[in-house]
Image (tube, rainbow, N blue to C red; front, side):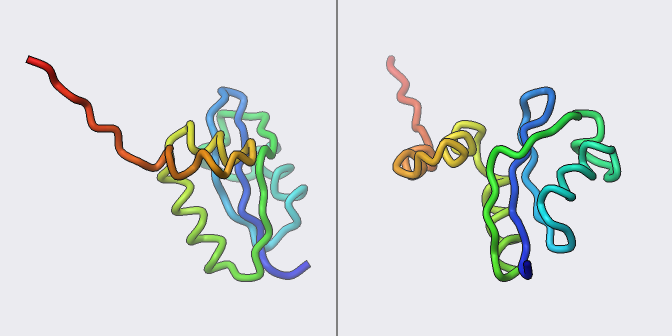
Length: 101
């Protein structure tokens, strides 16, 4: 299959890792994370499992989406993982705290 994958992994410490892969099928890439092939975030947070993935025809699109998701809050990532797309806009809004005298 041509193109590439954007994926979210849930790590052993319950954190999320967002990545892309264009050189491997997704199962191979996740296996590499679990084998410790890659230095970095997931190395000391194994095992990892895929909780979300989407295939793109273009690596440029996948990387753009990856950068966007990496900036999201945990709550917004979890809404995406659940497929709760209606919740995403509300989780994007900044909360303004009111102060009372």
